[in-house]
Image (tube, rainbow, N blue to C red; front, side, top):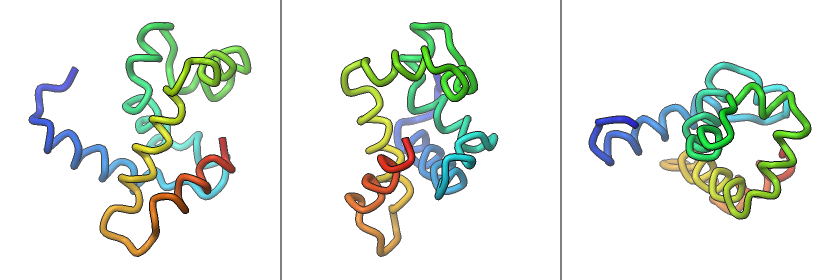
Length: 102
């Protein structure tokens, strides 16, 4: 767990989210995107002893994520909010875009 203050953690997550802005599925495999996936799904990944890469490549891991309650939805919303911060893009639009990719 990070020892940075919450505001600093939020700023770091926002910076990473903007760097990991995915417009197609292939971008999920980039280092920035995998890092963001790891941050947004940390508890889920730790509980199942998975890495972001394993979730991307394993259908069984993806199914576990899809059936884990609101974990995926929460991650999508957090990523979308961080990605549209200080832009003209509406969060709801970005959430729909991300849902179209996952």
